[in-house]
Each structure stands twice: as structure tokens, then as C-alpha cells.
Image (cartoon, rainbow, N blue to C red):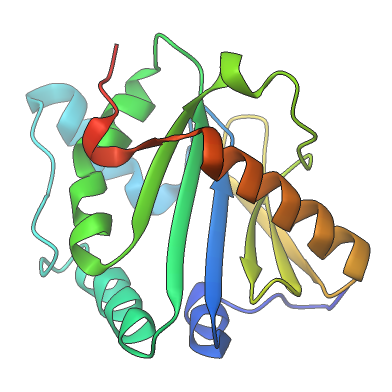
Length: 175
């Protein structure tokens, strides 16, 4: 494991073929999203402009990654009925799709028989894993990186199985 895991931009910029992201929490307490989430809870409005100051850094990164021919896929395992945070996330996912990400949702009850890693992760080109760690209340904690082949195989198998079962974003209806 390295001392400082690469930032998302470094990860995606290093990808040659694929970048996949598995999210398994029903709520995140990431500081950078707090104001936008609070606004959504109060008004029901979400920033869905891919070129807004809030989204532009992410969408620019995804667009340049996809433009190089890299497949960027995100799968989310969620409990149903979904949490407020997942409702908020779902409302803004059109931005991810507009930037070039493919996004799918898997109800947690359909994941019961799957072998899943203990943490969210990014997997780059099937070989490099960036573990995303969170505190108990969902705040970001320092991540880790590994190129250990067994970890990469576990993440690839888990992601592909989730992906095959999951519902494309355009078809996933919040309950």
C-alpha cells in the first residue's frame, strides 16, 4: 500500500482502458457535498448542469477520460426504500451520465449472495485498486491503493457481477 493514494484525477488520467467504481453505502457525509445536499433537502432542487462550477471539474475529467476511449462505469448498491442521500444522488446522476459515465443501481436485496469487498473502490484497468474509506458517519477518511493481484481480481469479479445484475440509471426508479 502506498503512503498517499492518487487523487481521482490522477487515477482516471492513468487509465488506459477502464475505470470502474463501486459504491455500497446508503449515505455519505462528504464535506464537499454538504451544502448541495442540504439545499436539495430544503428545496428538492439539485444542480443538474454538467458545466456548473460545482460539477465542471468532475465532468471535464470524465469527458477527457472517455474521449481517450476509456470506459467509465459506476455501480451503486442501495437499500430500498432508499435513503434521502440516495434520492439526492439519484437526482443528480444525470450529470454523471451526460459526462460519459455509465451508471447502474443494484437493490441490496439482490446482492445478498455476492462476494463483495469491505469498502467502496475504484478499479483502474483491472489492476490498480483505490480503496475509499469512510468514517462511521460517512465522512471521507484516508484511502489506500494496492496493485495486489488478488485484490484486483476480487474487485473486478465483484464489480462485473454487480454490473450484470444492476439496473441502468435511466430505468432505475426510486421507491
